[in-house]
Image (cartoon, rainbow, N blue to C red; front, side):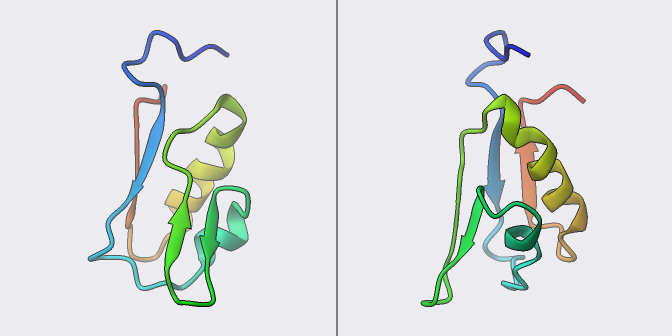
Amino acid sequence: MSFGWFRGGPRMSVDNDRCELYGICQAEAPTLFDLGADGRLRYTRQLEADDLEPAIAAARLCPMRAIVLQGWPK
């Protein structure tokens, strides 16, 4: 699937004010999220086609609804 026609392509962000660092996103999509030993969440912002399914699953499972996906076909 090509995402060239989406402005900037699919991307993800995390609302740090909502995120409680439960780590469910990392468990669901370990290639996209990393909850470091320092307590900081690092994540992939620009998504590729193969990243969409795990990103969507992580966003759906986040209990705080802190993960926002943009620019992807719904």
